[in-house]
Length: 267
Image (cartoon, rainbow, N blue to C red; front, side):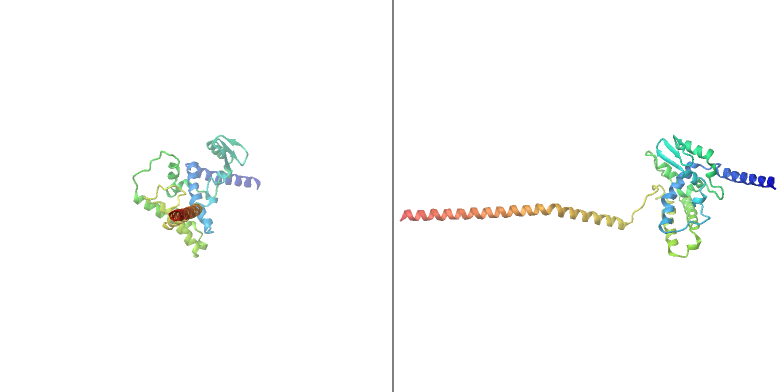
């Protein structure tokens, strides 16, 4: 009957809202942005590079990101001008547009299998992104190797589960996992933990290549700027030699003429 159908729809809607509220409660939108930034820098570009697919059960999948749909409909026109693409309203700060999204566009939040990215901030080093934004930040001197070892194992399990199982047998997923492990999990070491997000460590052959290019550039510059001067110098040397030759010839002719006059006078 219609009343029963109406009741079923209402109950379903309430269940969805209850699910959203249970996820959003205690889920920091700001820290989710930090985690999303790390994923945008190191996770999704590698899947694009190797043409890999993110598995359905991966917590980093876009379709499971609680705030993703809301966040991608926000535009920062300048420091004090935020624009909502869903309704066209403008706001003075990101804080107010976040409040607007929660009040007016809560239907844009993911309901099914929603994930709060803040829950993975320990693996994604969210506070490194946060602290690096301040110029006066001092890097802590203490480091817990055992804790980082635990996080690194957790990270490696996550990366392995995020690669679609249907393509794990080929070489590309293997390379994809190796890159994910290097870019994200291997940063969970004391000597690398505070490296900036987006930082790429160069191999020795990159330095060798850069040195060779600089040396080649220096040789080309030297060739361009020294050849004209060398030609001018050679011209000047030739002119000096010719001048000395002419001078010596004139001197010899003058000496011979004086000798002939002296001999004529003596006769």
